[in-house]
Length: 283
Image 1 (tube, rainbow, N blue to C red):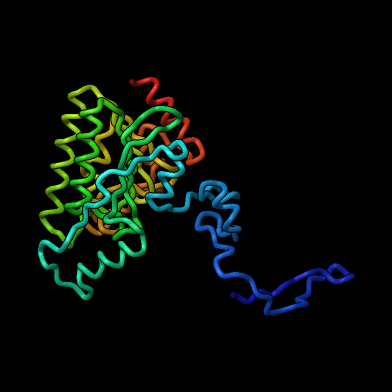
Image 2 (image 1 turned 30 degrees about the horizontal axis):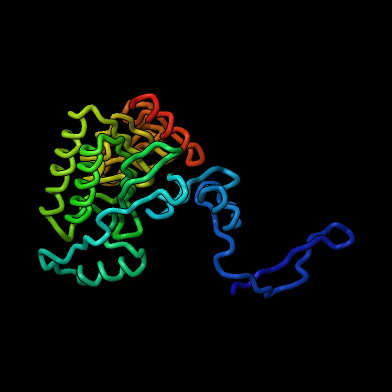
């Protein structure tokens, strides 16, 4: 429980504190990073995890994203049994194996990507969603393998592919094995494109690193959520490297749309309808 000081006006309309230490459940309210207002959590969740005042899009995990996008009960998860070990015996302050164990316990997933068959407003698709809450949505060998299998399923079944990116990039604990997934997934997408099939890439906050440098930017249509950070290296790294002041809003979805890297900014409440229309137009 948290402390709350209640402030109400007296008879002369002067505001005075009349009661302290009122118990309020922890987590009932949260501060919005967009407008700094206090947001009632339940109301925010009812708005698909968006601020009811300024529209700021709070980050959601992969399973919440799936629930938001697909027709109720239509998602058939694939390859959930795949789990990475520790192929390089990576040394760090916390063992990679322990990091994986904690991430699995926290998310209920075997790795940072959830994929499967689903329907979006009656349109059958293959859907793959990265989960930032699992080691920053980083792409390791299992994420690359699961995504490649999802792409190949879409190719074999001649279905549209939708990939939702939310990632810090390649997984450093797997080194070159992780970087290989950039080529692997891109090659699978090339075969999907050769079959004249639709690939829609949805970029959410953040989409960075090796994910941006591979499959995330290869969509036939590239959508982004408002104010999503999209780029390769971070802005501070870039500024220090080129020793120049970066433009306002650099690496935000709106800036990339102006430069032609993103086709459209789509608020979360409109995503299902926009995706369904795109499938109808292109398939």
